[in-house]
Image (cartoon, rainbow, N blue to C red):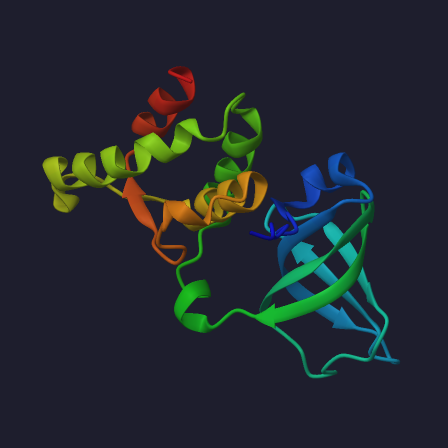
Length: 180
């Protein structure tokens, strides 16, 4: 049987960009400006860093709103863009940047990112047990954690729902990071 190598791509925000220099990354941000030649985009990342993404080919000059960019990190403020995806308003209308950034930080603070996988079912059970009406939600994009784990470890067999977000109480998230 022939083995297949799946390229890995780390989810980052502006603060983590420099740690992934010359590595493939996924970056989410809000478009501030598209250059006049339509080959670069200036965007504000989820942690309010300004990043320039340079593409080889012209992109849609009317690009605006939230986008997901795939590319190669060049330095703390530049990405060599390979592709981009407009994020629909159904995802971004209630997008909470601080929680997204906490999730990115959590992923890279774990010594063993697979540990978060064992918590996914526990998260679901915990939320059901507490009842959603008792707590103000902290929306954690487990999408990010799951996608990053799958990319980094190349385990497609996890079969995790990559578009699911879970609501958690903030102290529970802190409890998880303390127990890893």
